[in-house]
Length: 322
Ligand code: TXA
Ligand code: MG
Image 1: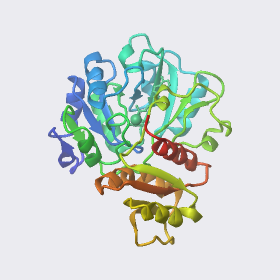
Image 2: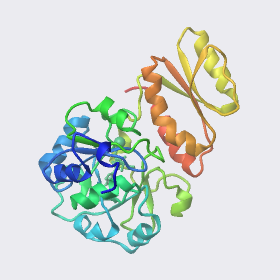
Image 3: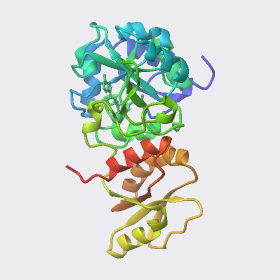
Image 4: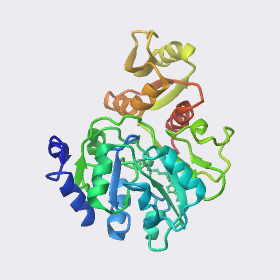
């Protein structure tokens, strides 16, 4: 194993030890290109139950199973369709989750009681090294408390899950920042179940709305900081934030480079491209809470490419609490 990796594992001596923990039923958080995952051996029912308990996750919400390589697919999927084979060849490793029929041996706790399984090969060297060393498919949801913004650093994982995780592989900040696109790949055409880091353009999927039943997980409240999130048109960002601050609330904003903020508004983060916003969004939602803000104003971005996933997450973060 490359020098340097040893010091990056919290709670285990090395990546190999973290992999051994997974094989013994432990929970290991690890970085992917999208967000950090909270992993367990997908075939170990007791270990997977611990994931649900640690996150406070509803039991009917299936987990994504992570593989080191597309050649592992038959371990978890009973039928690998030509569409899945094509998409995997083109986009794996990468932020694309394929929903396929599950092998009957896969525990119902992993699939949320469904007969299908979501699978992906993450595009992150530490995740791939961990999976290869463990040599078991690893079920891993995002490593946040259910409902909170997904973690894009090891510190976010620790903040949300201080107990119950056996080891954390620290890979620094995630490069993409929003989760994988979930696609039903059982038919002839990809059906988007959750918007994500792979755009509809890249998938050559219809741009107008999901054609399938959305992923079970998209029903739940998500990505929600304690503060109120307000989406503003970029041109109205400063005035919206200032008006909110004038009401006596403590207000912050995520700002495009070049834009000015009134002195009454705290700058939480600055971004240039939609890709930058995707990378920093969840961290900014967390920072807003740490700073004790009442309101965080975030500009809308164009809904094409990655912008579609960013706006999906922003709308969920801005939705009033149930
Ligand atoms: O980028 C990601 O996808 C990250 C990293 C860690 O891989 N994982 C992630 O997992 O976001 P989670 O559990 O937070 O979200 C998984 C989403 C949920 O909306 C879930 O309902 C959906 O994927 N999903 C998983 N398996 C499914 C299945 N068999 N059918 C439909 N949707 C599924
Ligand atoms: Mg999640």
